[in-house]
Structures are given as structure tokens and as C-alpha cells.
Image 1 (spheres, rainbow, N blue to C red):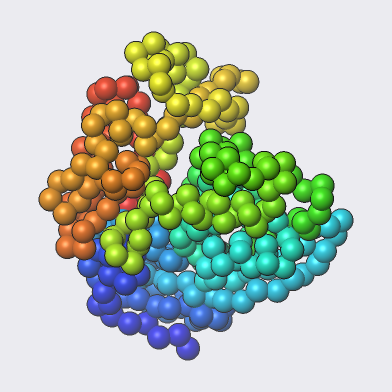
Image 2: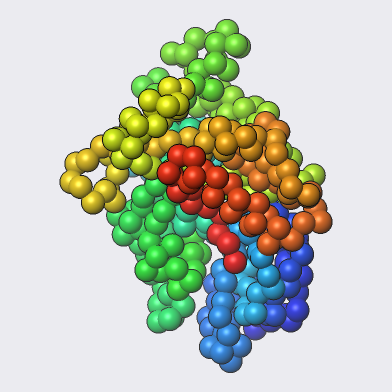
Length: 352
């Protein structure tokens, strides 16, 4: 029987290191623990929050319900087909280690997603994205338990309704579906495998190292991205942060062209966005860090909260700030970006 604890500090369970308490807390280490939990009076009478590595959450107050910490471990190869390896990984496993482990075994696909903090179970929730790749590109299926029906379910990649930093787990299944395992599909590294190096930072690093961009291996690319991230991002063991706080905003091509007249240096990527209300309309993804930089908030602080010196998109908590302090600073940034660019910055971080 799983143990339900009371009045537990969550400071060590969130990377902002905000010191709030959960009225109830349970650490799920076996699937049976889930079934034991949802049959209790505590679960039926109080709200619940599913928590992974706490790398993408900001607590602004105590949680007056039950926090479910997912610590399901394990990994196994479940099949190989046409040079594609399918690996089933427990939701509590570390994402970065999972990507690196596949490379060590000679399989690629996750090299652009290295050094993103958090656990495997949260990868499909926010459809983690970095350097042109998304979690959906390597997710075959997601397994879990429906907390309302008690059913074990398997969702295909299509069932997950993946979009830019979004999925069904943030909408219809929010708080209802506890992910137990993710099945990734990795590609065998062969001479025909092509790595994605189109991002400018990657190309610069390759040039600086004097390497041939046509001969970069997946492992080399992973190491390049790790080095870039370590240079741009703070050490989470020394400062409270979730790294990127906001999503890159998506605007219409017309709005972007108006901004370009005033800000010719505006960075952008053209996309076809499935959520567009106008069929086949062209939308543009702007750079959130550049917008924050242009409003003068690069390396700006307000008391113990601020933006990181090497990356304006990263909000940092100098240990003693409250979650509300961080949120107030984030809202100040949102307001100024809206006033100057008429662009809405949405948090990537989940605010509780």
C-alpha cells in the first residue's frame, strides 16, 4: 500500500526551489501504487497534481490537495523494425540520460533534445522542443492510467494531438491521465542518417571547431548542443530556474511584416500551424528571448528575481524569492512585450 504523507515541503521537487507545501504527497514507484491511491478517500476528496521532475512548474502558493510524484523507472527494448528501435521507458527516468543512452547504443533521433531537464513522463505533455526537433518526432506511443476510469490505456502518437509545445495532456486529459511509460522510436545510425544542424548556433559551433558539416555524427551533434546549452543556461544546482519560461510566440505573416518595418533585425521562422483559423495560412514563430531583449529586460533583475545574463528567456530565482515574486516579474515582462509589439507571451512553465 502506498504511503500518503502530509504537509510535505516541495522545495526539493521543483527546479525554481520555491518553498511551498503540499497538503498531501505520494511518491509513485510502482503502477499498483496508482491504483491503491485512487481508491483512497484522500484522492476522491481532494484535487491532485501530477508531478515529474518539477523542471517546468512554478508554485506560487501551497498546494491544498495531493501531489503525485511519479518515480516509475525502467527501460526495455521492445522491438526493431527496418532499422528503427522501439524502447519503452518509465515515466520517472531522466530525459537527457535516455537520449544519451540511445546514442551510446548506436541509435539516433534524440540528439537535438539533449540536456533538457526533466523526466520522460513530461516529454509528451509539453511536447518538448529544441533546435528544430520535438518530442513527437521520436514518440511512438504513450502508456498510462486514466484516473477517472482506472483503465490502463495506450495512446498512439496521433492520439496525443501534438502541437508546438502542446498535447492532449494539457487539455482533454489534463490531470486525468497519469503517464506510466513512453515508447520512443530511435533510428539506427548508418551512413544514410542525416542530422539536423540547420540552427545558426549549431552551424557556428561546427565552423568554430573546423568540422565538416556533412560529416557530423549524431553523438557529435549532441555534444555540440550540450556545450551550447551549458554556455547559455545557468546551473540549476546553483540557481532556481525552469530555464525557458515563455513559449516562442506565433503571429500572422502580416503582423510579422509590420514588426519587421520597425525592427528589421527581428528573428523568425515560417511555419504552417495546424491551429490556424485560416486554412493554409502562413504563420510566423518569433523569438521570445529577442522580444525580451528588445524591451530592455536582458540581464535585468527585480530583487531576487531576474533574467539570466546569457539568455533573456531564462528567469532565475536567487533562492529566497517566492513563486509569486517570480510570477510578478514574468507578468511585468508580458505587459511590456504586449505594449511594445502587440504580441502575447505565453508561459511555457505551468503556474500553480
